[in-house]
Length: 248
Image 1 (spheres, rainbow, N blue to C red):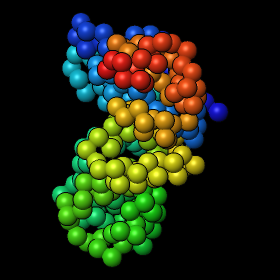
Image 2: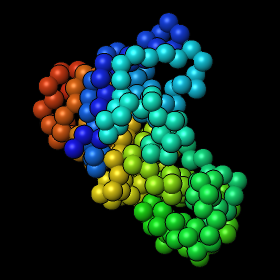
Image 3: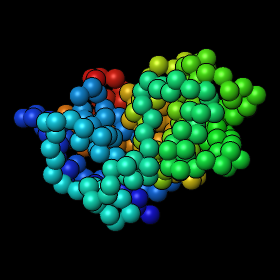
């Protein structure tokens, strides 16, 4: 079942065209990984899925992005960003306790009951594979967590507002292999209930977690297919060159 449909998407920042006529579909409950060299438009595409690009004054676009059949530009941005959460490359915990970081979104949406907040926090931390590590110290500062734990805390904070889609922009770029493995483990579990889109510069990570993989180059979608096919028999030689490290 198609969750997001992108048709003829073009994006400019000033006179520079960053995405060129991108067409693709994102399935419900899949992990779509997006790979490509620097300046290929990967992050711009990702940020367009919850309209973060609109924060740039020189941004313009044409084409359409529909989620569940509704054009996302017709949705209130606050509502859209509740439905489509984002986890950034660098962990961005709030200067609050672990508990208050995760409860932050629920509180801003009017939930005040302590028992309900605790249930939300516990569920989100469990889904982010962090609960067992922090359940006895929820009142400590989030800044006392390791980098990998902070990133999983940010995932939990996103999950607490019950999104439908989660965008990951190189979430493991600053993490060690053990922390990376825990984030990937969480992603594989999360796809049971969420749709995930992962931009990564680590092609091995894309191969490990992606159900399908899209290869972007110079603002164009070169190809999109099942991850196994992309990594064993890509349709375009440029994809093969990138995966084998011949450029990028």
